[in-house]
Length: 91
Image (tube, rainbow, N blue to C red; front, side, top):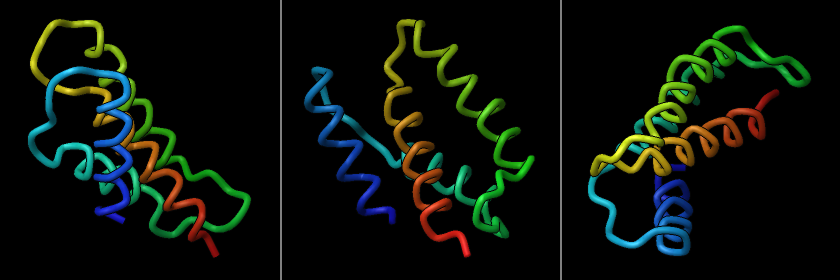
């Protein structure tokens, strides 16, 4: 999962932005979102997932409008990958 998230984040960052990525913060965000989906059952959305998305990913959307050297795009993509992995593996 971590390798898939890194490849997706790297490829999309190359398509949309100039510069390079450094670090594994997108993978960390993938694990944060994925941890909120530990005991998810098919066709349910846990409250922990909703809260994590509002708190962590919401703050990344808000910070994406500031000028800094942090790639909020990688964080958001990591969260999206974590969501996809969690719901695809639901029992």
